[in-house]
Amino acid sequence: MIEHRPFDRLGAADHGWLKARHHFSFGSHYDPDNIGHGALRVWNDDEIAPNTGFPAHPHANMEIITYVREGAITHQDSLGNKGRTEAGDVQVMSAGSGIRHSEYNLEPKLTKIFQIWIEPTKPGGQPTWGAKPFPKADRSGNFVIIASGFAGDKDALPIRADARVLATTLKAGESAQYKPGKARHLYLVPAAGKVEINGISVNARDGVAIRDEAALKITALENSELVLVDAA
Image 1 (cartoon, rainbow, N blue to C red):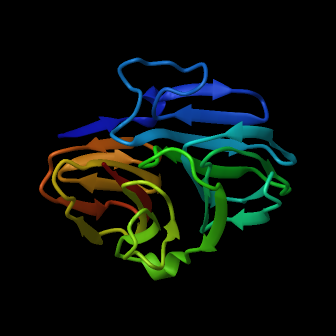
Image 2: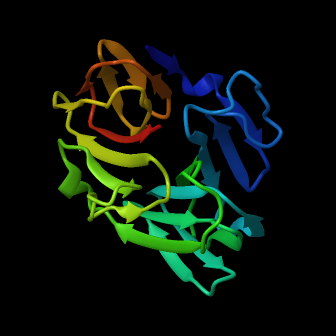
Image 3: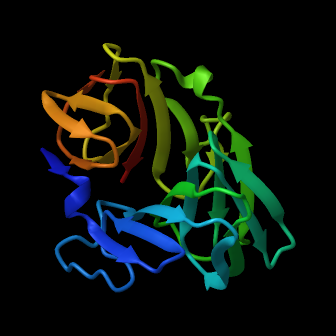
């Protein structure tokens, strides 16, 4: 099953300083038939104006991955963590038993992010935060695991979920393969470019929900950048 969700049909919100598209129910965009995809609960496509952002607010029992597409995001939280994550880099926050954080675009230009929330395997635990660069050249032509709940994925940022977040860049004409395990929920979004997934054409920022496919063949029709979640 491959369900293509075009960008212009996603839920939308315009707060002036924040323009968002919601791949799943979020905030004022409520769709009881689209609460999530397996353990994946949120995939927001956010554009944040310069010198604005999300003031301090709480979270608990959620794994929150921020994939920076353009610009940079500056994080601060109630544990004393501070950090600036720029395009090509990734940050992960395990909200655990509870944490407050703020996320601001302190840059002179627009910042664009994917905000991805995944349910943890169990509630509670000490909250944590971390960030790491993932140079695009290192993931050219191959999926690189950028966040993972599996101990063997040592180069990935750790999350407390039965899930992986992966990314790749493909030049026009290049292909990548991905073979999921049985009963997995996959969700793929091109951050840029245009691809074909098992014969289905997918544009930048479209969503693709995938289940019960033995293998994926992804061919770039243009130079492309992709993010994939593989979750229980």
